[in-house]
Figure (cartoon, helix red, strand yellow):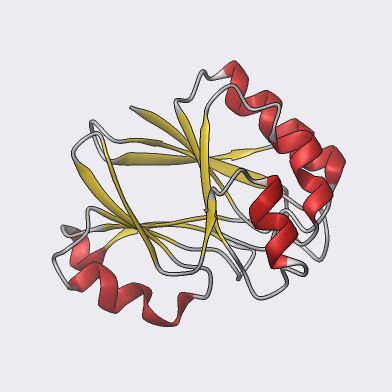
Length: 161
């Protein structure tokens, strides 16, 4: 299964639309968001996804009740554990426990956000995949990025939007 992975959209509607268009063009089956959507109106663009969606709240998300409602109940507190295509994934926003989660042996992938930097690596070179898609928003330094994750091979790739 091909998954789209995004994080830190921070209300940047133009970049969110680019990410949605990118994921739709790749025909991903599900999009995961690792937090910091910020405002409920971001679902005006996110609801154009031609895929399922699940995400978590980040440290900058404001009206969590309305965000949860606009998401159709598809935004969760962290950590959020999912099983997709026989793979066990966990979503967190802040990276403080990423290595411990990856080393636990309980997950095939640990997905995080917050740092606004792309990151793809394996725990000790062979364990769980650790993935940060970077940031969709154009704020601060760095590029607007997202990731694709193939659950069949557990390989991920970062894409500039």
